[in-house]
Length: 432
Image (tube, rainbow, N blue to C red; front, side, top):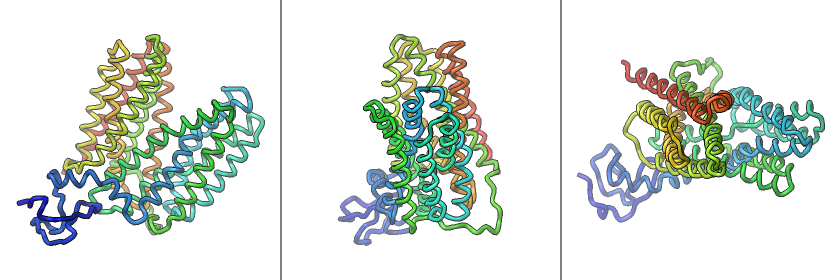
């Protein structure tokens, strides 16, 4: 029987529940000091403090906050390059080429940098990588011709470190065996979303204020400064795994997760094009920004709430259920005729995104060896970026030929593929 709250006069939050300071109340659990049985009234009280408890863990706040500063810079870089190159050359075409070179290099080189980090450690690889990134940004700022601008953009993308993946790897080391890892990944997801909301806004403000170069410079300062401070947090760095055995990511479980991330990237890319086209077709282009803003706020809240709950359902089952829900939620978008109808559908589908991203991280951590964990997280990011770029191109063609609903068809197909992959992963996990 669970005692009343008054049975313990004072509680101390921990990474896995609440503990009575006096340690005199026995709940009959494996550890008599724990006061948060899953799903109980005590568990709800634990949830309200879980994020603060995570950040109070040894060294957690230091590496999380410094990585967050760096990822704001990463979120600023692409748009910052557009502002800078256009101001330098007067050509959006050149700006697009430089930005495209940056994006492709980031997607391809990121996993290779992650491989070096897994092999030699974050604290040894990150500082020289950041110095190379600073030099590449300096080269970009000093370039005048299109060829040199594109070359510098590629070097900037190839040297940018994926600080979000490095931070996630530290959470795995810190919380290995704990039941709160999903909450840490939810915190990471929220930090990423805040960065990609605030970073571009800051770049646009600087550019509109007559400082088109400032966005690129400030982004580099955030990446290098935040990255160096992150690398200096040595005590929370993941240990270097022995190179005695070769580890591979080519496992069925991880390949399915990569496919899920490719599909969710496709959903993102198609939705950005399609929602904007829908608003323009209805003669209300300003509603697109409102939809994206409301959806972003809703997904932030969904991610926050998801991390608060201690889920009993297996992660692969959760992923299948949420992915099927997202696929079903895309169907009304195919027949939406008014901006309000579309806005409701976009917000509802957006609520599924944070759990999917968190669950992919949780399942990836369980599917791969620790020696390749950073690579796994970065490859998932690269898969999402590739899916977004590819689907944006396909959705653009679909919108040109069939209108906005053609773009939503691309988004629905992407979500359907994601649901099929998630169901496949669940069936594989449940088969003896």
